[in-house]
Length: 174
Length: 320
Image (cartoon, rainbow over all chains, first blue to last red; front, top):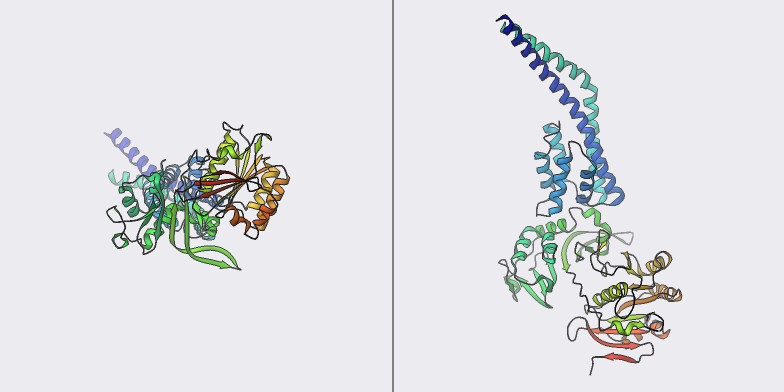
């Protein structure tokens, strides 16, 4: 019985610590995802600015060059745009945000901003596109900067909290 | 993708449903006119017809479905591939060429800055002109254009009123000269397609067949285009559509002086009509062209009326 209790305590501490490590890792992954998204939107900007590329082609080009977490998202948008099935661009973009970003660590707030960005794309002239994209990239940069400042402390806090919670539960159970 | 699919994809959902139900041969459909708050109108087999909500062709416009602002907006979104910004230059010129070579003419409020057309807003009128390449329509004309002694062709001017098939004829002449025919071997052809009507390039790819030895300068001013082609692409023949300005004539002088053969079209009813026009009469006086091909639509679009040589001697006629 004592051995069983010890094994149980170890399992509780491991799982609690594991959760702490998971959340701190998600935070770090979120920063990486935001940086990747910023890079991809920068590619879109370049395609539109220098080559005046229409959106379906520009997004398809990103989808072909990128093999990370955002691949399913750009793949779906590209596919739906080329179908010309009678759905507006913002609806296609919004649906893809809601369904194709499960492999990323973006939060609900990040996805909301990304969906909002899609509502203004393709509208009016090239200057408008540049302004829209620049504004969104600036938003991403601010978010990355804020997160990067506090990520170390928060990660340490989450890891420690996970371990301590596990020990606390163990003590209560014993 | 066939004509029907190419067309339906660019229309708003409501219009797509109506046009999709229409029982007609899309190969005979010439134009679709979308005008805000006006009835839906098509030109089919050279005749006008209004379309009702339940997809019937009628003569009475009051029974037809009315085009709304939202339908124009939605249609423009699909025409421009969700990217109106990418077509600023085309909008300035008043038309967009889509997949399949179909030309979409647009009209609305023009934005002018420093006397230059900057763009267009409040697009309220769309004219979808469907492209139909007629292969073989140059067969009766080609034998008269071949110069067997010089192993080439004669400088040719096609004279025709609007909407009589001159561009369609020019297109087929280019194709046959480029590919080669029973009358001659294939020759390299340079095309200056200022209004993107001859090749109807979409994203750089010609949507019409212009032959295996043809190079196209798309959306390029004719005069500059002719010079560029001669300098860079070594054409044996240069083809241009709708000449008329002084710059065009100067460029034509240059082209002919370089030894290239020229095929051009011009608006007019007859050779006499061209002789009476101030700038174009110079062409006839200088005897630059060796063949004049006259078209009309008296017996249908693309009807070949007469062919003359440089002295005005009639070589072919269908007139009594």
